[in-house]
Image 1 (tube, rainbow, N blue to C red):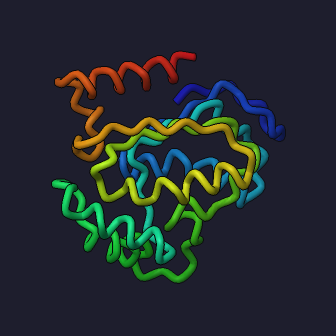
Image 2: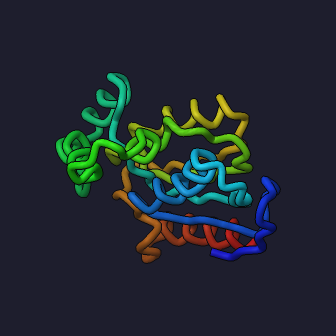
Image 3: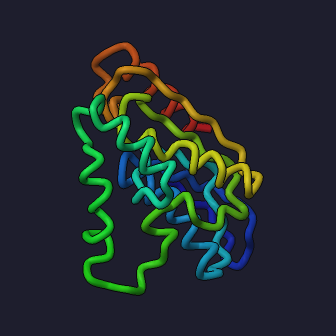
Length: 174
C-alpha cells in the first residue's frame, strides 16, 4: 500500500489496496470498516479485489455458488457455507459487513476492480458486489475469464494470467 494521508478528511489520497481471495474481501473491508468506525481516513484510490470471498448471505448467492462448485477445483461451496463459524471464532460481535463484504457501506469508495474466473465458486458473489457498487454509486470494473482456476492471476505462467496480472500492475501504478 502507498499512503498520502491527510488525517481528518474524507478525501481519497494516494492509497491503493489489493487482495486475493480472502485478501480481496479484506481490501474492500478496510474501506467498509473506515466508514463504520467514522475514522475520517481517506478511502483508497483503487481497490483491486481478485476473487473476493464472502459468506453467501442470500438464497440467490448461495445457489450461484452451489452451481459453480462442480467447476471449481480449488474452493468448494461446502467450505463457503461453513466458513462463517471460523470467521467469527466464537464471537457474536463481528459485524456482518466483515463476514459478507457486499453488505457494507461503500460510501466514498472511488473505484473497485474485480477479477474473477467465471468457473469459480466465489464468482457467485459477483452480483452482490455489483449491486453494492451500484447502490453507493461506486465505479467498478469486472474482469472475468472462463474456465480458469481461483485467483489464477497469482500464477502468471499462462497467457490469461499474465494478461490479468499486467492489468493489476497498471491499475496500482496509476
